[in-house]
Image 1: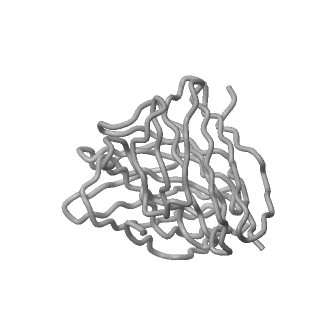
Image 2: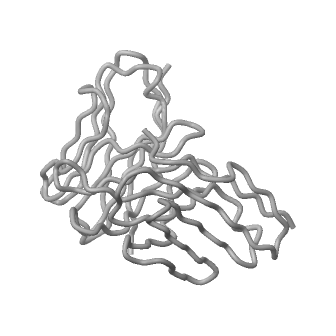
Length: 114
Length: 115
């Protein structure tokens, strides 16, 4: 089952603009991760934010985490056409066997137009 | 450095058959996880293995099984294939299992089509 929802489901912006995607989840987490997927291929890890962190930056990416609201946001600044992809948030939860499992949201399809 | 590799890239099977998918993790990574991604949805967790032991299992029927070898590579087996098993199967590796968690690095996936 999906952990939560991403919002919006689809986003279309012009190159140079900022893109913001939101993610909500339901259970306690170890960390939250954001991934990018191009055209149904493998997922690329973008950034990980731990449950005790509130904000993290990596290049043009900024992620926030609000554990009280069980939500996260991903901001991509100065977007480029190459950023066109599907973006997924995934919560890392402790599994019953002592391991970790990622539970993914439904994804946001981002299209950056020239 | 080589990333996570998966084989085969594409596979077409008939209902009732079985399939074996293979994954080699990033060098030094001891944890391998498997995910199923149906078109239009996010990936769903199937299994995690660490040091050859199962560390987690998702909500999938017993037709799905997996194992990890001493070199940390892994196989996912699916028996008695159904049309609904058609999906992209993703393998991910990580350095550890348990605790606060680590980033997982995904392979390109195996596209399975069941006819």
